Image 1 (cartoon, rainbow, N blue to C red):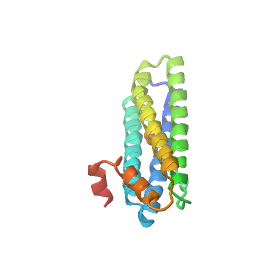
Image 2: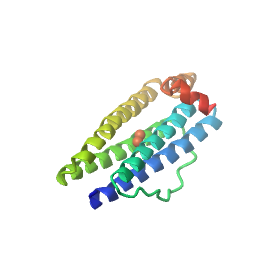
Image 3: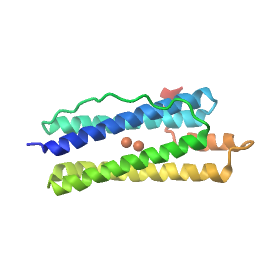
Image 4: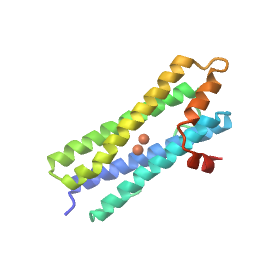
Length: 171
Ligand SMILES: [Fe+2]
Ligand SMILES: [Fe+2]
């Protein structure tokens, strides 16, 4: 029998991934209309990835005889000051998700639900990667700056972290 407490928390996690997917889609759109092609491709890809994270949770909850529920989402922020603000948001969003994953790991362990614990390991390493990437990109923005050709260079750099296949769908 699937632990009810974990079912509820995994559903909340699913909601966080859905919210992140929607937040990154809104960012991608803003980047796209502001000439930031690289950042647009990057955040379209991030949005897709968050949707995959969400779907993994849907399937896992249901496989365990729980019920995965699509929650209502809040409207994401749709306008931004600049790419530095966006990357700062990205980093803090990812840190929030990491915190939530860590809490889930703690409780799965406490409840001795080792299947869920094992499932969550993927999210633990995923969050480590995402946080590292967000921090690296934010550091580069601070280093290069947004003046003159800086913004162009930054956008190119961010674009390099969007895979070719998703760039195609973003075009
Ligand atoms: Fe995620
Ligand atoms: Fe993420």
